[in-house]
Length: 171
Image 1 (cartoon, one colour):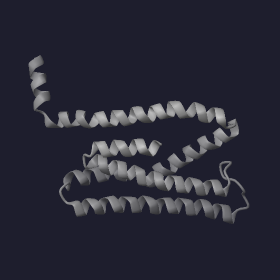
Image 2 (cartoon, one colour):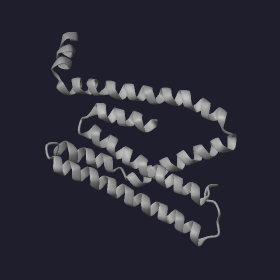
Image 3 (cartoon, one colour):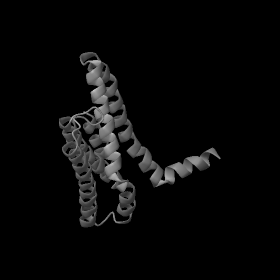
Image 4 (tube, rainbow, N blue to C red):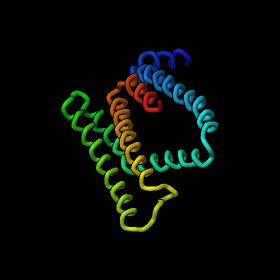
């Protein structure tokens, strides 16, 4: 019985590839957790409670908008990429079109927020002024590019590059 499982493991190329790819993700994940472990106490110590709360609210809103505007496109893209791995031109098209769709959705969300500020006499939305919302838009823009790039590399089975992008984005 033990030899049977060992033979299945040794013969199954997919399992080997999965373990090989996982080591890169493990290294990147440990790196990001270690950076968070080192940076968060320094950040919490060097800023006031109000500034830290603004930073946290900034990240939460940015992540919420990112989830909203990426629309789960990466799941559908993964299926399409697995079917068309050899067609480089089509893969480039998939990558660019997913970026464009998400960025257009982000521009629409930011347009709605800016229009809200312009049409109402409200100075703050979720305790953040308009300039802070501009920063959220710029941060989310680059996060979306990173998100789609990571998923694209992951789907075309370039685990090392995907893990490096994930680690680099955290820095």
